[in-house]
Length: 116
Image (tube, rainbow, N blue to C red):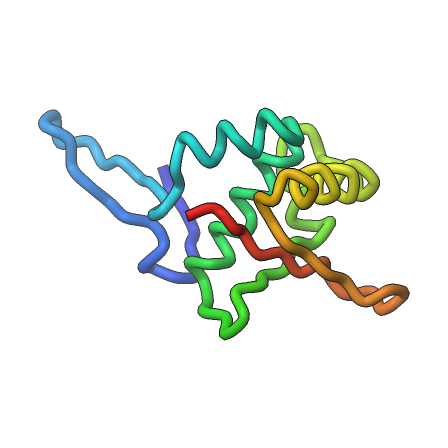
C-alpha cells in the first residue's frame, strides 16, 4: 500500500509481529470521534479528522485550522457544503468546536477543536 503524506511526522509506521506495516495518524481519539459523530453524524467525524490532519501538518498560533468544502468532498459520501455548516452549528452548540468564516470572502471556514 502506498500512502502519500506531505508531512512525514503525521503518519507513524509500526511493524506488527508478522512484519506488516501499520499506518496511523497521531492524536486521534475514539472518544472524541464518538462525540463528534453522535452530535453531527458523519459530517462531524469528517470535520474532526480534517482538523486533526491540519493540526499535524502545521502549527497555528491561534489554534484555528481551515476546513474547506474540497476537504470534505474527499470522503466517500462527498459531504455537501450545507451539511458542513449544519454540522458546524451543532458542534458549536455542544461546545466541541469554535469556528469563524469571513462572509463572501471565498475562504475556508476556520475551526478550532475544544476537546482535550
